[in-house]
Length: 257
Length: 379
Image 1 (cartoon, rainbow over the protein chains, first blue to last red):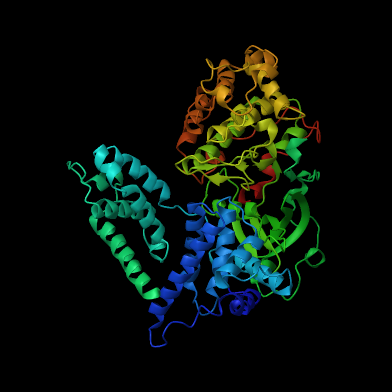
Image 2: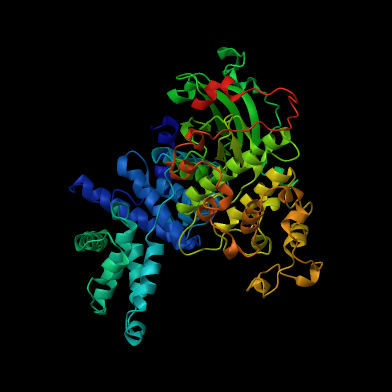
């Protein structure tokens, strides 16, 4: 599975783009906890890069899912995570038909790691980095066996929000930023592998559930709960599981900064 | 020639001798993979001959060293600057999830350091070649079974919210038995619930529906149905339904000449489409299909009715693939054909077989009977 060429590509560039970022975690920490933090930081990098590159939210989500799926089965110590992240952004652009240029991705990433510095010259270092991004894309495709089209919760959340809005008192809805909060919660899910552990419908329901609860917005009570009406196979336990994962991520955010 | 822009398939005259899988070639002579590759799978197939060249790939006929089956090897050209072409990524990721008798089967993906090869099942010909070989319109029974299979494949992918977006005779593969398989999913994409604006320039002009020609970008499954309707007419008539030669405007003019220039009454919302400029169009009234395409006049009325339902100007009026399969036009097929599992070919139903075409430019008097090519089944 692991081609020798791609492996060297992955490690060679590690020094280029993230020398200052890694190694900041304490050595005493257990490996899984440290890996979780690394993934959290890299996903933040993906999202920030995505915004700077003008990517829409679904391509950014795809980039994060590609990243988590890749590291589902390989160790973060074998492949340089930031290089993988750059290739995920590039690949997500192709999958979602929002094409990006490797040049732009490299420049934005360079700026992320060396804020204030001039863009990279078109020298050997730049071309090597570009070759690595392209090689790593192939590695990701191989690792994922070309399963790169994903169902995201976004379309479900949009649909659920429209349905719920019609059930809620119009004034209560306009006073509280339920929709904005639900979207923000959804975006934050992508910081951890929870975004690939739960069904997209369940994530959408849980984000909406948490947003409604946070503002105390009440929905009319009927024979069934509102979330049962919107999504047939979701249970309260599913919602709780998503919310618990999400809260853990917020917990980690505090530790990562 | 718009239809040749995307896939320039070489018109290699592949005779019926394909049933001899080795074609007299020796193994070593044609073996073109570099030696010393550590990926075993690359050695499992042997290239035989070049079948064609596309925008991002070259297609070879190949043979498996493991089981002797013929395969089509689509070798993806990788550009150092851009990596894997996005069409290849989309094609592979979509086809991996599609298993249907009327969709080309993706057996395997071979990775090497410099190249990427998709291994497809080998299908002998495509509808464009088939129509060239049998000019002047196909046997009406064969049109029916081809059309049924085309709609069956479309119904399957549309049910999975996938659009093909590039239907044309070159992309419909035809086996010896007459099995039709949708191929070339490079432009296909999953259709998500909130209909986004997709990039406008996708379908080959001849098979492009009027709403897309008018600049609409919120197209859906009706896009493929129009293409299917055009192919239906082309199979019957032996000539393309709307062979526009120059640009979008001329293509539209060909369509209006049959359907009439649409108005707000006949198609609410049409005047808001970006390219709608009624003053540019010559006034024309809707025609009866049977007066435009003479073959329809010789066939029962339900043939013309199905053509009309697929070739509606307004996308919302077009019949869905699933409903089209229930159309009376298909009543004469044996009923079990409606209850097949996805992966079962319609030729498993007793009584379904390809009829001998009346015209054949290769063998005007002689035609190989299907019983002489028993191997065709396993491909």
